Image (cartoon, rainbow, N blue to C red; front, top):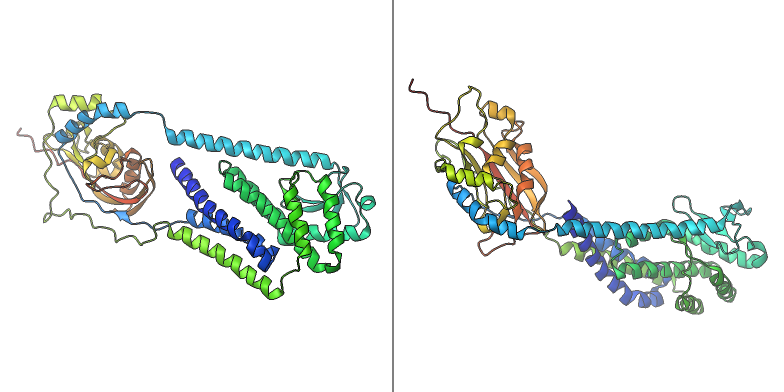
Length: 481
């Protein structure tokens, strides 16, 4: 699960990063040709690319063929690989990476909340101004701004009526109401969440900052469209409000401490607004770019349909299960028991010895026969760890064991980049309702795949199907007495 989160986060950031670079390349041209609103809409592209990568994708399951070996061969291979397992033991890198990402996310979120709390504290008590939805702060430096996420409100500084003339107040309120009409407060909250989750990505921080720049330019264009004769007054008003602006993470404001965006805003005021037809064309361009970015991100993931579920080998008398080797001698069984705690397991299917068989209902003990743990597997070099026969028999459904019921299960799993199986589900269970599906799912925690080898097999980052056959030991021979 942890590996799946990290892989999804990495893929989403890579796809969104490519889209951000594309937006950076065209946003200036789009603003000049189609208007500031179209340039603001371009930022849908990174969101669409990230969402497309995180959406479910069908994948081709890795084909495999059954291999069944005797218990003594499995024990020999296990004993031979145990020293290598001890050498490969090391820290869980995936858990360390997840802990580092989580710590960075929480730290960034704490910084955002601290800045928001500082702004809220500076506002003091809010009092209505008489204008609908407009409140006056106790501080001279709080606003003009839209504050809040779920219930955004326009907050004006304490000297709002004395500092600004009536015409200036009308322009300010028109700008802030343009933010409310566009839902910019919710968009900025989403941008803050993206910045927290992607704190490690410089492109994410740059994208959030420029998104808010384009957001303000879009509101400026909306105000100029309503008051075309007030361009000069509006430019002078920007200089007044720029002096008192302070950071507001969850809300709408102009980023402080940056001279270039202010020049950009004033330069836009000198340019004529695009015609309505060009603005509509700009909206189409932005939508096309978002759809294209999402489509390319989707196409980068495997999208071919999975093949039909392979049929399990028949288990009737006409197609018997391959013969299983006899029970291994005591020294090999002792070696296998002594090394069982090691993290590396034999990468083959094998038969369980008689001491691993579940109890039978008549009180007798099977002798001379072995319980078969038949996995649909791949050549041994591809599995660094997998269940032993004892693991399968421990997972055997109790009611099925009492009734000596046998079953077949086909699992579908995703192989993570670290070799574990995740997102496992039961594709087929025969017979149904006997508990074999749940038992097979328990065994998936014991699998671990190596990188794909020339012999083929489960490749990390792909999907596989694993048919598992649950077989009871043969009934004991009747006593001669």
